[in-house]
Length: 98
Image (cartoon, rainbow, N blue to C red; front, side, top):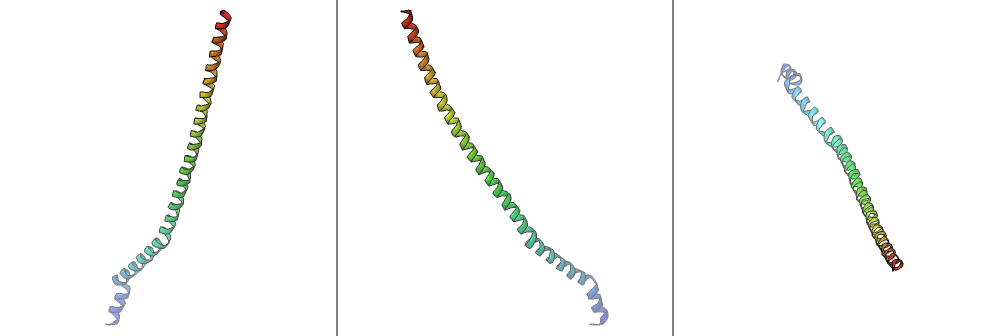
């Protein structure tokens, strides 16, 4: 090969193609070694945060259900006591009238 052929290969389309392939390989390595791990860590931390929120919500719901159960039991107890008072009042009023 003569100098003109070598010079054409070094500065022509072949060198541009080799440069393009090198830049593509560099971009691929940057993407796969930097961007993908960063995105994976971000997604994992976001999912962990969502899991914590779900756990907190479940704990809040259980506490709310316990309070509602306690309110229901208290309400039933109050109703029984009021029913007993009404029964006593009726007994006392019937004794007074007789």
